[in-house]
Image (cartoon, rainbow, N blue to C red; front, side, top):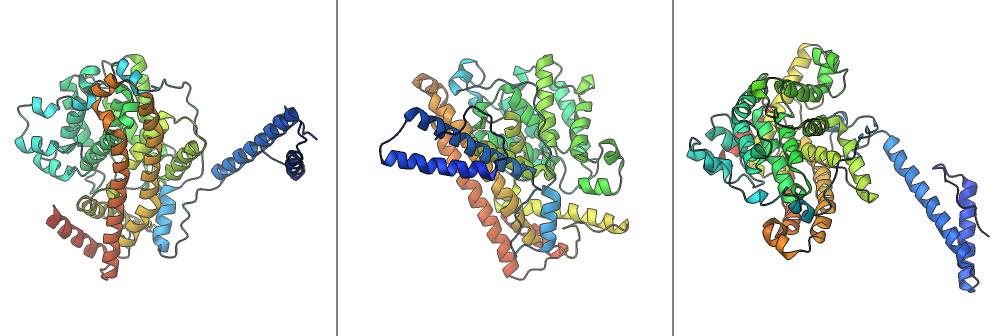
Length: 500
């Protein structure tokens, strides 16, 4: 008995086909038991069965993408308001990814990258701060910890007189030698960063301001470095990552996209209710580059410019929190199906992870970001109350369970995202290291000697911080501390002041 072979299976599999296949498999087992086997027929039948299972798997996978987003928020310990906030902020109906017109070339190994002259001694070049005599000593001292996950961006902002974004971006551009590689005029860079910081101050936000942009830019740098993904990228892609991080919240209004949509703001009208603020961030930032005095990319070739612009747009639009579930599902499916990892999707996920990273940082940092974020939420709630609108989840300054919201945010959003980043990075970097067999290459590229260990250490580090932060929030709940805005903020400011 043999099933028809050579036909393309439809992903919809009928019950009759399943029954026939089951009978076929049982008969093959019987034939094997009595040693009565036609091997050509056996091969055809096994091949058909494999195709059937593949079609079934593809069908089930597609169904999971077509279903409504689900964060599986079934825990009774998560308050209704917190569940509403998670669902309304981090989910959306699934929309298919647009297919890239052209697959960008990928380096298959670090050997190739070194031979191409792209990564030679990148992480060991002299930092820009040492070449700038006018940098204050406190700034130089602060920047010594630039490669550390626990880097204190608040301290940098203080010692740089409120210019943490400008200071950090210049440091990273020079650290990676991107200024010389792409002939970035220093005068244009300074003018651009001044305009960028001015735009971040436009709405005087408590959270989405230049300090947050500096923190996210630093976090992207650390994610690329400590996961080893840096070795997978070209210089242009590193430049795009840092630039996207720096501009990702430019001119943020301090309100959610839903607020813009519900109030029919001008921004919502311009961008048709789709990734409203993210579309503005990237559009307004690129408009800055239209001015000759602030065009830091004036010396890029046309292909370089088009590639950078395409990548930056995709990365910044990927910071729309409503695309969270879609991003996570797509990358998880890619890893499960052993597909090659698309660079723009990987880098978009890294920027998204950096954007929500403070709960994966030490408590001394996380506890300082939380009150700033809550203040911004509550300011929106005040506006909604004034306009006669329903107050959005977690935006009522008198009735918001801050501790519970942070625990849920860590468990349902932050930890799964960072776990996926770690898995993705392992799939990217380990094959690169295994392909590097030339001892002379390894000796030149000292980073290869600790990349795997650092990747394992990175997973352990962020897991330790998230567990500690959840424990701190649970202690606050056990101690019966008020969930009101005033009590929570005061406590966090006092704690941060003692630990800083």
